[in-house]
Amino acid sequence: MNFNLSDEQKMIRNAVDKFIRNDYSFDARKKVLDTEHGFSRSHWQQFAEMGWLGIPFAEDQGGLGGGILDIAQVMEAFGTGMVVEPYLSSVVLAGGLINMGGSQAQKDALLPALIEGKLLLAVAYTERESRSNPVDVQTRAEKSGGGYVLNGEKAVVLGAALADKLIVSTRTSGNRLDEQGISLFLVDSKAAGVSIQGFRTMEGGNAANIKFSGVKLTADALIGQEGKGFALLDNAIDHATVAACADALGSMHSAMRKTVEYLKTRKQFDVPIGSFQALQHRAVDMFTAVEACRSMVLMASLKVSDTNPVERKMAVSAAKQFVGEKARLVAQQAVQMHGGIGMTEELDIGHYFRRLTMFCSLFGTTEYHLNRYADLMAAA
Image (cartoon, rainbow, N blue to C red):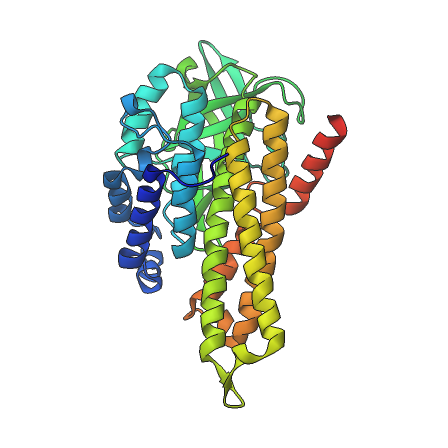
């Protein structure tokens, strides 16, 4: 099998790398974070003009018809610059979900606007008591006339503070932990009965807690089939998880590279501290971790589109558990080898530490994915 990037993938990666170098320095990123919403509309429009928002979507929708390997190139480059714009939550997760299971009318209404940078989406599936388990749903949608009435709460919804529309997982039948009975609905973020409390995440992005109180939905707000939305949601989350792993890989590589540069320039006893054998060994451990994660991200990217859901889930959980473990190692080593300056706001290493720490809990903790992999192995 040929693991080399295609010419198109190389072009995408080179373009994003150039954007990070020229327009997304650490100081430029801090200015974005200092704005009211911690988000640059001009950057988002630039993503649209470069075609990055349309990578995973069909050409007849205005997209490029790419796949998860193309997305991984964008995400890895974004990770190097710690990009805070909601590409993962809006394009990969929400856009991917619409692309996988939306009706043609929903795709026609949403995807072109998303690709053009005129629409932001978010997926509200996490709840206060659900932790990492997307099947744990207590938010309910009850039939009313020809539509539905939505009640419940969602917590720590990535990108929701800025989203124009939400995709909400609800329970239309069954018990709390049943896979059957989960339905997905498209909800306007400004609809009557929707209350959004936004906040910043630890690494600078945005999220929100959301309350739904008697929100009236029409029948065409349903995405996919009623009561059968979990398989669709689970698939979309797995694709987003692989993209998040690619982002973490980019952050890990930058943290390692910057640490090695610091070891070469910081002096103690009139010699660079990089000449100390103990620190050399730790730097090698970081390098080994990064390159091992590169292989895991590639493996998961190739397997996440497997038609066998068990194979897909096992590959994704293996990657998330492994990359999460190594991300923690690299983040901790980077800060420790920088010393006290590594925890200051003025240096980027502490910000990479936060981003990688958040990644460890994103789309399921390391422990959750280890258990999911073990359960899938036991059932196989």
